[in-house]
Image 1 (cartoon, helix red, strand yellow):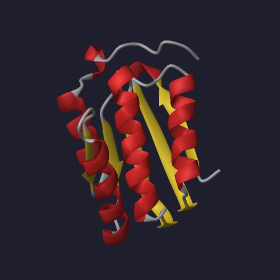
Image 2 (spheres, rainbow, N blue to C red):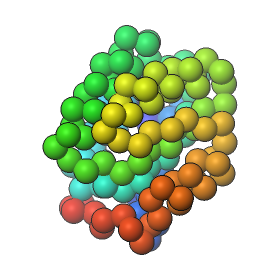
Image 3 (cartoon, rainbow, N blue to C red):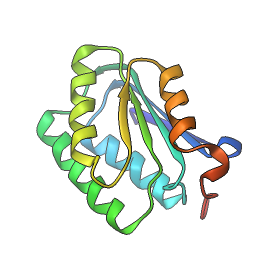
Image 4 (spheres, rainbow, N blue to C red):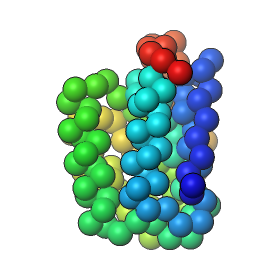
Length: 133
């Protein structure tokens, strides 16, 4: 799998790191696994700084719409997407724009800025605990 994730329970944070090439299936699998683990309300950092190529734009639009629809019925925590290359950042912006209606999603160029934003919009002590796992 191209995306590995880990829950950091004290900070109520999920950190997902993508490597090499990612597909829409990789992204959806990661999201589904965190949901099955009861972590949908946790804050999330998606680190895309180590990928060579991302999924096509059309797939990102579909993923964004799926996440937006799921957010209608579930409370999702904010997501910070970190991308250093211009191409990957542009693809991440598509995901940001597509899913922004029901969820806070923002693209950053570095992990520090992403964590600062998450701490501002959703301090750990205000994030619900995991519902399962």
